[in-house]
Image 1 (cartoon, one colour):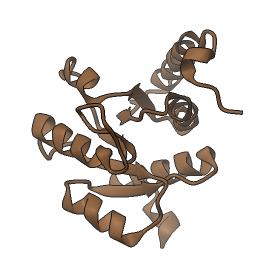
Image 2: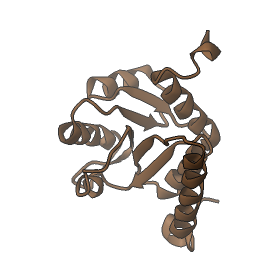
Image 3: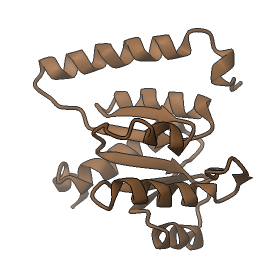
Amino acid sequence: MWRRVSQVENAPCLLTHLDRELKAALLDRGMNMPQFVMFDDDQAFAIVLKKALLKHGLHCDVYARVDDFLENADQNVDLFMVDLAMPDPSGVHWEFGGLLNVSKVRDARGRDTPVWVLTGYDDARIERECRRNGADKVIFKGDDIGETADDIAIHWRWRNGDDRRRFR
C-alpha cells in the first residue's frame, strides 16, 4: 500500500543518508553522477523512483512544484523530468498541468538542459503534444517503477553516447 511521504517516518533522512553513501562510493571510483531534477506531486512515487535511479548511478532531486526549484535555480542540472499529470503553476490539478511546468522550466533555464516528461498515458497523441510544448522526450511510467528507472537510465546513456553497441 502506498503512503504519502508525510506519513512515512524519517523517509527524507533515510534517503539523504543513501544519497550521501552512494555519491561517496561513486566519487571514490572517480565517477561523476549526473544531476537530475524531477517535478512530481506524488512524492511517494518520486522517492521510490529516486532510489531506483540511484542504483543506476543517477542522482535525482525531487520537487513537488517547479517554483520551489526555481527559487534555488543556480543548481547545476543535467536533466529535468516533469510529471505530466500534476498541478499547473497556479496549483490547479489538471491532467496536462505538467506541460505548463515544462514551459516554465524552459523559460527559466533555456534549451540547453533537456526536459523529459513522465506520463502514465501511453498514447502517441500525448507524446506529440508534449514535444510540441518543449519536451525533448516522453517516458512512459509503467506499473513497475524499476522498469521506469531502467528506461530512464537507458535513454540517458543512449543520449550521451554510452552503451550504443547494446542497441545495434
